[in-house]
Image (tube, rainbow, N blue to C red; front, side, top):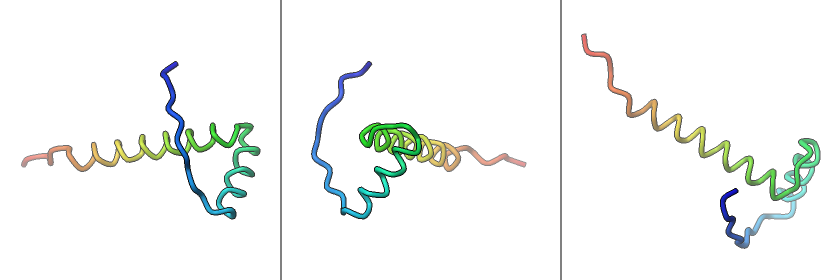
Length: 59
């Protein structure tokens, strides 16, 4: 497993409650849920960039 770096994340209390509930529903820790969501967002962003950079079909 890759080494992980700790950092401080400031989140408003309402968002934190929602994330905690979501994590519990998905059987993850809060940290695990945040990592999962960030990972999914990065994957989605990479797919979107790949679609934008594909060459158009030339006629």
